[in-house]
Length: 351
Ligand SMILES: [Zn+2]
Image (cartoon, rainbow, N blue to C red; front, side, top):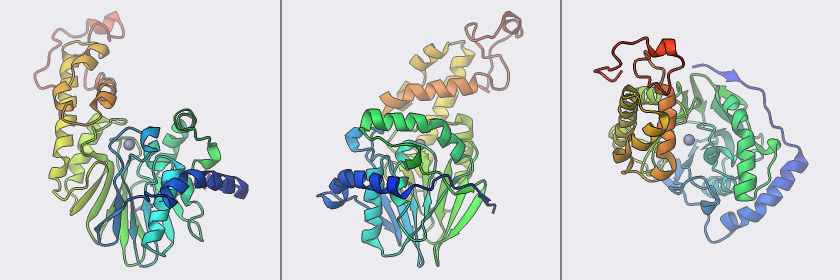
């Protein structure tokens, strides 16, 4: 176990929080007080999950596209991801309050993608004392780099004007493993080497053997690569060894067939790896690779049009320089001396 406390980068001015919550109250009125409160299901004793829409992070679904959850101990509640807008966060907070009178003591962010975290602001005053926000030790750097994009996308696409002060950073960073005691219930948080992103964190409830894999596991929704393809496959091999009764993916339906629940994703990512390596061996440019790689396996998933070509782009960039330069095409060789450095550009094993 290791702990590394990070400086608290919020605190929100009361006036700002009040105005934000007043604003969110309008949007949240539909979600919280209207006809359709957020749906949550108890998937194991004291473990609740909300399944997000199988869509991209757009206003069409109010940003409610990631799976969210909360776990109830005898003392307090841990929330696992908060949704893609403050209104989604408020709806989740209302769902927690409908379920238990216990306070929220932790808000855990599984990685710094917007659909998982922009509801954080709804929880800053969810209890007294306020909950601690917990994420991978790499999370704050990743979020800081993306924050301007997220604020712009919220304004442009969702018509939601937020400032830096509304983006809640963690006060507790996990650089390996951290146990959180909710009272008669321990959650084990684990940060992983770069895979889906460089700041992936899983949450494991020991009592029910429920694993919140978040975006280390996609179901139905095409896996989205924003970290390392080889790293993700390595992390999946490690995840397989966990004793899991129920797995909650970041997107798509929960499953109990562990580790078989990862098979479809493993097929897609393995195919992406081998096909991209083959494209590099054959000297394809990145554009040619995007046109050709992995179209058949990608067709089995939702949102393929949105994410597959981007995945190939990320994979190509990662694999282009692996091991040796034998796979380099003339178009991607950095200079003539390197272009002549290999007599035989082909490889039999694909790397
Ligand atoms: Zn993600």
